[in-house]
Structures are given as C-alpha cells and as structure tokens.
Length: 357
Image (tube, rainbow, N blue to C red; front, side, top):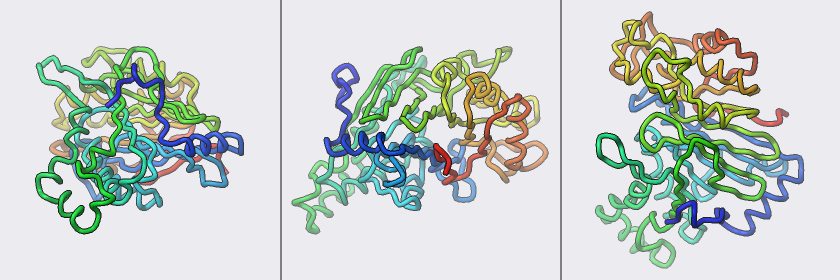
C-alpha cells in the first residue's frame, strides 16, 4: 500500500497506457460520463445498481476509452460495466468517496473477476481517504476494506479451488488483494491532486457526510467533471445557507459537469415522510444543487443516488409524501433554483459525452 506522500503520482499502470492516454489527448479528445448505478442508500428498488460513475477519456478512434476510471462501486457495478463492454481488467483505477456499503459492496465482484481473468495484468489503483477516526471512537478504513476484500474467497476455499483447476500458474495465491495498489490521501479543504495518467488528472477535496468522505474532480483536455458523492454542508442542521458542500463548490469552480447524489425536498422531516432529520440533512437538497451548479457556471448537472427513487412509494423505511416522484419532479426542483444548464435526472447507464457528437 502507498500513501500519497510516497507516491510522486506513479499511478500509471503501464508505460503503454500512458502513451495511449497522451496520444488520445492529441487526437480530437472526448470524455464519457456514465452512471453505473443510481440507487440511493441501502434500499433496493426495481433492479437499480448501487452508486457508481464510470469516466472514460480518449478520442473518437477508441470510443473515448483510452482511460477508464470507476468512482464508487455499489452493488451490481460489474453487471452495468458489462453492459458497456467494460471488463474489470480494463479499469485503470477505482476511487471511493466513502466507506458506505451502497458505494462499496460491488467492489469485491470487480476485483475477484480481475483476479480470475487478469491476474497477469497490472495492479488496480484504488484511491481513497486515509483512515478516519469517528467522533464515536471507531475508524473508517478503506485500507482495511481492501486488505480483507478477498478473505471470504480464501476462507471458503474458492481461491485454492480455482488455482487447483488449472489456474495455479496464473492466478495469484493470495487472492484478489494481490492485484490491489491502494493509494491513500488525507482529505483537505483545498483541492489536491491524487492521481494522474497522461493528460488525465484527478483531484480530491474533503467533504462532509461520514468520516473520510471525499469528493473528486477529473480534468481532461475534453472537459472536466466533479463527482460529489454524498456530500452535504459542514453545518448539519438548519438554519444553514444551503445544504450543499462549500468544499465541493470550491472544487467545482468552472467545471463542465457535476455528478451528485441528492435528496428531494419532499422527503424533509416537515413533510410527513418519517425520515429522521439526521438522515435528510446529510444529503444535498435537489434545489440547492441547482443553485450551486449555477454559481460555479457548470454546463451540466447529473443527479444520481436519488432520494427517493423515481417511481418508489417508499425510500427504504420512509414513505414518499403524496406518492411516487417522476423525473420531472426532480427536474422542476432543480429549475426552481434558477439553474440554466442541462439537467440529467439519473438512471442506470445514463451517459453524457463531451464534446457532444
């Protein structure tokens, strides 16, 4: 495992990939943003995958796919990637905003698949916050999460069995963790570069949700995108100027695209939803997100991790007052902020290309 201080940004999986990324930047570059999962929280609804966003950069010759970055990996991420023709062995890096299960539980599937089929390939860069101690005394640890990601496969005998089946000369004896290159950083109130490859730069900033939460920005010659995760304002209870993160707003200055989780105002504790204030208040409100996107002059706002899910009568244990919402309900909530850019209400596999064809 490596810390950011020791890294010197050697997050290049191979010289060949770096050359590919560089050449892509010189030949009509393009950027693809695809939601690999839009389910909000630990709830389940109509087969939606857990939170995740795939960022691809390249040119028209390689379908914008010289570099592939996965941000969060909720349940079903591997299935959504397969629908895009992307295998775990093709990913250059996985980034985690935080250690909530709905953002991480699909990762075991990704790295186990990589171990089975691509054990001779390069290690997978996994970028996340350093250990963060909660005020309650426990520690949120991406490092330990990854270090133990293969334990169930080792304990069940699957690793040994698959090596005995003829994979012993290819598949690594320690299981999928042997393919993991963990890169940690300490989130700060100012953006810091945490990963680079060719003309692709990823920056991170501290944001509030649970201990260790971070938000990311990807900059490429084709455009830029911020992945907000589940960020909210540092002030967790009203009155507050807005529910969005001031740190994310700083990170998003001049960005082309913002991808962000959101909670519709209808779920507020004053609206008879039954949702506790501490749950509602630690997500960014839909209208506030539109206002933030307008302030930073973003061209596109992509809503994901929707609370509540479109068409759902309940968000987990909490009812949706007035009945299920539509995509138009979320869109109108953004428009109420005065945001004049493009609004995409997220569904699994919704995509945006920069520049548009």
